[in-house]
Length: 131
Image 1 (cartoon, one colour):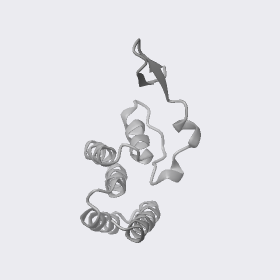
Image 2 (cartoon, rainbow, N blue to C red):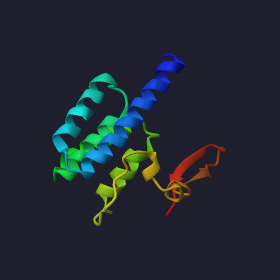
Image 3 (cartoon, rainbow, N blue to C red):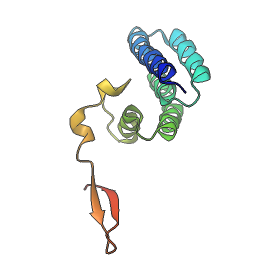
């Protein structure tokens, strides 16, 4: 994929995140769903549409299917922080009231210091979650 197409894709997905945030706030769920489904078809390997579909489903009260979409987003791109944020949010007994529509919703401080590198007897580093 060329650099121009990648930039256009990133821009379009950023606009999608912004629009879905706005429409969810206005409770225009059907319009949201149509936009997200169109993006899923156009960008089948992008995590953003699945993350947004998870948010939409959570808003509509379908927590189980929402979790499936958050996991799909994370599986498509394990570095996509909003999917991990939403998975952790919904995986806890006391979920927070905030969704991560995009990276701007993820607090920088929460991303840091969650993991550390431990070295085994052979000098091989392993990433482990901090206690």
